[in-house]
Every structure is written in structure tokens, then in C-alpha cells.
Image (cartoon, rainbow, N blue to C red):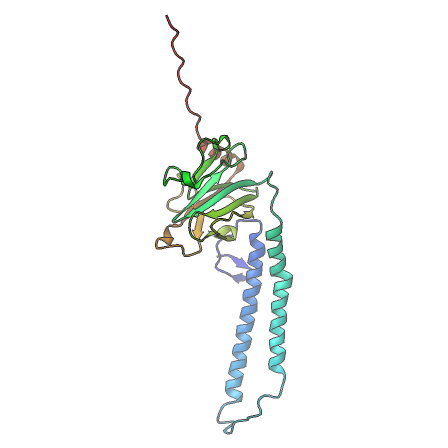
Length: 275
């Protein structure tokens, strides 16, 4: 169980560079909620005893004369403003305005559909091949890759399998083919809606490879995985939107890319000389 600021949060392990900062903010908010719960609970008990009917058989129609409640409400508002201005807004601003250097990041596309995650790597040339919805065929070409586009000859596509190297920023362009989905990586502290017609950039830097205990049923052979979930109800079989995230060393990632790269067609045998 993940513990932050001494509080058992019950969160999954954090495996991204920015995750600890978000967890600290979550812990601060929960400590604040605990203080509010205890404080208002004690005030409620005080009111039950102080203003019980036996001690006050006749109602006071003038109401409370003090300013305790006003000061209490002002204190709550002040703390909420501090949480927003000093913590939440700066974290949000950094996350939306500081995309990583594309030359240093692993760039890929994730295209959601009912009910799978399609992952698209640009290949060795770093250029995504052209896609066309008219070319989409279930199973064989779920992304509609144009086979005649030279830039797409080395592209790699997978279904429900996301591989990334540790220590390098991952820059993901997220979209969907049908309804709204929500791309959720619990251990990376990443959650973003996938909107039809939009490519939404999200990024994070993995800080550790998958531990052995992270194995999930359906994970790639001889690999350990973390979960990719859909956090938006997207249809009757929404539960099937489970993918598998594998974080590995750069050497293992390069090997995985090489093993899954499209194979060049075999050269036709030379014609026998005439005569």
C-alpha cells in the first residue's frame, strides 16, 4: 500500500516522474478532509448537547449572535484557495504547457475503439504513416494505414500492448475511432479522455521497469505488465477495455521494436539465363 506523508492511501505504486507530486497533493487534500470531518463532527456533537431541548425548552428566535461560524467558513475557503493557488494550479500549468522535446521522447499514437486500444509507433524513420478511415478493416488494419505510403512501411502497430523504455519521456497522441474513452495508466498517474476527431497529447516519464509481481493475465509472453484501463463507460462490454503496459530497459525496448518491425518482402528469385 502506498503511504504518502504518513497516510496509507491505498494507491498503486507510482512509476512516473510526476506521480509523486500528484500523490502528495492527494494526501494533503485528504488530511484537510479529515480535519474538516473531525472538526465539524465535534461541532455537531457540541450543538446537540449545548442546545438540547431539556436545557432550552423555549426556542430562541433571535438566532446565534457570535461570529464563530463565519470565521470557520472563512478559514475553510482560505485553505481551499491555498490548495488551488499554491498546489493544484501550478501542477496543472506545468503538465499542459511543457511538452517534452520530441527528439528525445518516444512518440506514438493510441487510438481507442470499442473495445480495444490500438497503439501506433512511427518506426525507425520517426514519421507516422498516412491513415485513412476508408482503409480500416477489423483485425488486419484497424488503424487504416495506407500501404502505399513510404513513411508507413516501417510503422509498428499493436492491440492492447504498449511498450516503453524506462527513463525516457513518452509523448502519446490520444484519439478514438468512435465514442469517448478515457486512457488510464494507474501506476503512471495518467488519465485523459480520448475525444473523437481530436489528437490530444499526453506525456510522462517512466521511472522503473515492471516488477515481477506486476504480471497480468493476457500480458505478452515472458513479460510483466501494468494495466491500461478505460475510465469512461463506453458501451456494454466496457470491461474488455484492458490493455497491458510494459516498461523495460532501452536495450529491451530496441529489441522489441526490431522484433516487431515489418519484415521486408523476400526478393524474387533471379530468372535463369536464356539458352
